[in-house]
Length: 270
Image (cartoon, rainbow, N blue to C red; front, side, top):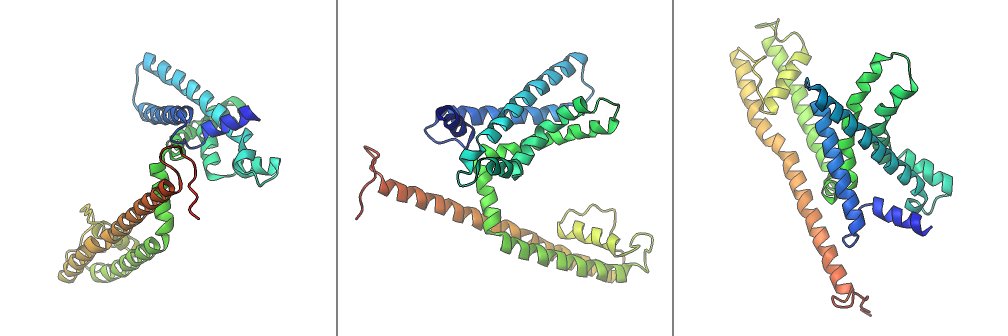
């Protein structure tokens, strides 16, 4: 049990004082980033020697990720102590991060199971890119981003709804105005919706644009509104980050009050 508990402590998010856990987290992050680079490298015509190195790195990575996955399943009962032994394993296996871990190693093993020539299995190699999502497990920064999106989900959904509503109205209006002038460009409302998306986000690809006076006026109004509306979610997220930073600072201050800075013992505040 002591070994199991120690392994559990190492593979979980690192404690500030746990050097082994920190080394584990940093090593896994480097390995994940290396694998993302390998996925990108596979899109190039590489020399035979580099292909061999890439394949060797893939095998080593899969072995490490597989061991990590099995260790996390093994220690799942410590992650969910309130659950029964096998229930905790099942709960972990079907958790989001566990599914990501499985997707990270699955493409390597499937061709070994299906020995027949299933060329479609080659497409599964792209799933290796899911390994980048594993970084979320080892960094507090990404966890903070997730917290901000969770805390501000209602505000973000409201702003997205307003943007979608404006895009829909603008696309229908633009279709009604421009369809008679250029029916081959604005064939339907979906073509106009593509224009509305490019205009609201101020991208302006130039593949579809109005030529009538009314169409140009509407396009100008939508472009101006887009500058403000696209900035709304950014402001919400920024405010969320400031609140999260303040919460962390408040938490740190409370902890510094509760514990003696010299001996580390809890101070009796009664």
